[in-house]
Image (cartoon, rainbow, N blue to C red):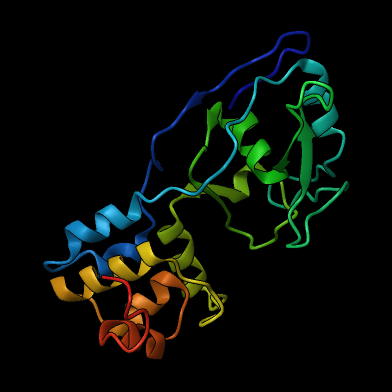
Length: 207
């Protein structure tokens, strides 16, 4: 844990990937498709890098958290996004550097001293406004999807796929060792959609 000394700024380092693999991945990492799955695991999300934060900004951030006991959630009390995550702004309007950051990402950043750039900051408590560092863990998109699947929170069939996703689905299935329903869980779509993609009835133009 980092203990902050107000009056000084701090710039954490960047971690290239999560320190530990989600245990729910184990069933998907056996067989000839495991190498391609490792590539899929390393897929990063697009996020703004965390800037250096001054003591004033750090104090302003923590003033917006309802800090409770270590085992409880620490709700964000300020602005939230449409998806229910806390939102915290940093930077200058005049300099064009103003950006909005998810509060739980900032909380992880300040607590761990590492920038989770390109990775998902996930909640063990499944409470999106929560900023308790003890409830946060870092993983890839695949880690996050499988965690939601294991908890029964993944809404199948609502995710919009991209051409790159379609190519990865076909490569994974061709390599073997992965079922259609497992691919559906990984990419957030139904097994039926996976079947249509594999047989070429959907996304026929993507090779």
